[in-house]
Image (cartoon, rainbow, N blue to C red; front, side):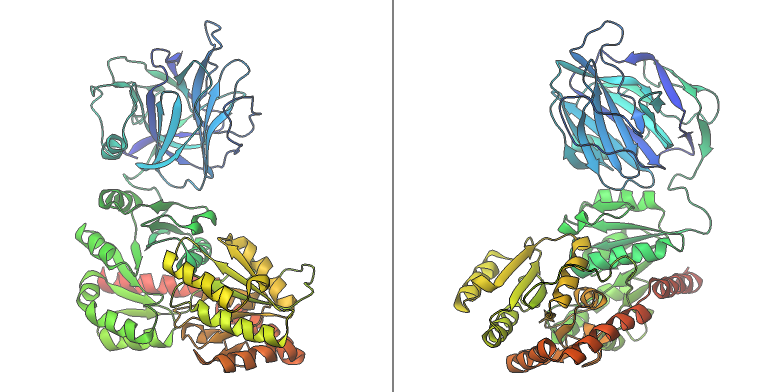
Length: 594
């Protein structure tokens, strides 16, 4: 959003230029605009042909009937539907109304959207970043539409709208990125139409190009807003950052999003690379980029009261160097594969952390508490439990498996210590050959050498017929798996060398799946030995087998552990308590530092 004034469109609004279709532009063109949708739209399956039933589409750009005026059915009009749940691109002519590109992901706050057609093939860019390519049109020509915001029988966009541009060329990624937040003169080469929608009053949207395709506005209202995201006085905007959406941090981000949203706090997330955790949808803005210019634009647009940077010291310094004036918090949920590494890391990077953040945030993990107290005695520090919503992720009833299952969750890497799990599993199978092993992993995060070693170990221990791999499972399936493991008479075995928090352990406990774990420090908040779970000393295989066998055979103890584990998590890790702690932290920092 570039202006203080913008149009707010309702369920009967339209912006109609002097032309229904811009037939002068064919097959190669660019449409871009800023939008702030307020309602979802209907998502259909992508197709390059056929007629889709239109229900609840939210057309910022209306797919006008391509044969309008002259009956030419080989020409299709292009439209763009935008809702809080994604973006769809449609083409429309005689017996032809397919969604040629469908993007299913949250769209919240002011968002820049660009659709580039190159030789009849659409590509979507969101906030200057390549997002997706759609299907090539089967029609002879595709052309942009001159009707915006909606049309009866096709659907009306609902939300804020600003800065519509149509170019008679396929804009490059670089061109989109560099100009999306700049006001244009209207005289730029290849700019065909430019409606700023910043007039502030009246019923005419002026075209700033020499073509002067002014538009009539119906059913909309002019709104005033800041140059950044419009928000109520009581709301806070928070940006959380991390390297990759995977593992415990991705789980934590979803959990605290749900907790903080209940307190009218707007949470956005920034990752420096793609990850499988993005398949776990949440209804907010999630950015994926490691480009400093893009990150700076996100921060400027977001109007964030605080930015919480998890682990990434380069990004911490970068944001500080941008001149960001809000609260900057360095968060650490775990460091390395042993406690010595954590101490060495903090000692080596003490100056960077001290200089670039206002405070440090970490969970109640003993080695982290000790390390931060040692190396940052004078720094503002906040230490409280992470949260978990046991209403959404909980025990499920499924048909009972005939044989006990021992589960494991992690990555094939040193800290997760998969070798010990396979050895423990093989020794328990020696005692009970009916046992099955289920391993859940993100296979995008392991090295080729580690995977070869894993395969060799399976063969060495003769586990192939006992082992089932579950790769890249969506988070909402894990409650089902944990519940099945627990009801089978089995347990989750955690072999990590060190954990900052250990969400997989917590999730298993919530689903009445007993846990046998190394004392990896971060799980001490969950497990009390023989009360809410079981511990064994890291590397002590015989002890692990002994404790695991007791979980398999001592039914009264097992059931008592299952019951107490659920109660413990519900009591100590509530979303409400996390929200209270987080809000108190921000208010404390505002009063002391800002």
